[in-house]
Image (cartoon, rainbow, N blue to C red):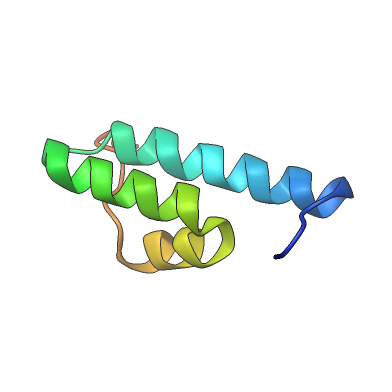
Amino acid sequence: MLEYSGIGGLIILALDIWAIVSIIGSRASTGAKVGWTLLVLLLPIVGFVIWFFAGPRSSTSTV
């Protein structure tokens, strides 16, 4: 089993929290939000990468 410790673990934790906050703030359905959140929680690195390229984004706009 992989162990995340030190600064690398903190970076992964921060990125996963950012992803989860963005998922929750998105316009995706509740089921999609739960699925994406579980993916990020169960597979911290791979889940984050998949979410980054294919997941829902938060609904806030910068216009």
